[in-house]
Image (cartoon, rainbow, N blue to C red; front, top):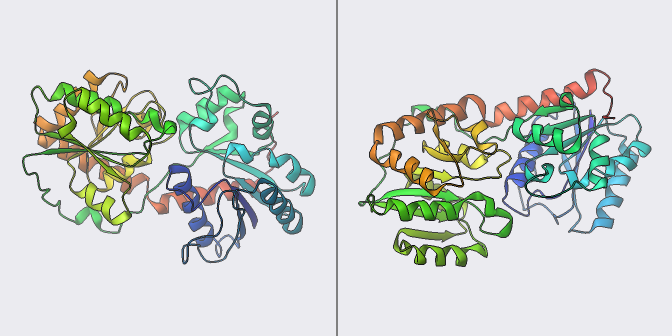
Length: 378
């Protein structure tokens, strides 16, 4: 099988889309022998992969944000290799399928969608014509969640059977279920954690709502401290909000953390909260569950598809600081419930969202593309 993967970015950022793309590359490398896979990667926003991070058996073309360069590299690769499958990593590159169908008529076209970029309301008023046409040229659309697939079905007027679901995943070491829970140093604190970018594109994450919830909780739960890992221009705004609400001493902005620091931060937390209104999946919940943390999630986006209310977390109205405060208080006052939810979350990850699950699902999607005729959406 010959495959071309064209993506916006792979190594240049740490967002959910980039994590997904890096996992796809890893799987393509691992599937090289079983699928007789010959794969090349074209990344619009990347220069070159960091030393030692590009998986074996993959060809990589970084285009350094040069659009003309990316289109030229894509056309050259498609024309020369005549791939069986072309994988598009974002709706913004889907219009390239119009050219690819001319250059390689027998290729199958598969689009990956992650969340809000494939939705319409409430994030944008209309779908650009080029995106709508690009989506209709696809033989398959791979969504990280059923929620996003349903949103895109409505927004783009596409048939439901065009979609396949490929959830995000995390790396879980073998035998980790048998590792005993470590005693988290409390020092009189209940440590609540969020991991999120603090930029305008991440306002929907709900960190400000958690700060407002903390102000409500401080009346009865002064031991609750809120830690935010991640940086960006919204930090100053959130710092002012915490000061205005009188909880500045209980809200801790950690900034950007490297992998080691983030691991330690997860280990020192008691619970995780991200009451978002716009998650296309919510990979951060998987990361929290890796560390056996109970989670507080929103109930208006794909978060509630990943988090089962009352089992591995608590889903609430993310627009209600009072509801968020109530969920946090439940975890503070009932450690047994919090522990049970954290362990259930860990089981959820190991049974559904490991790298092996992701690779198996991706392989099946690729095999399906070659197994039977597929007609593009009309």
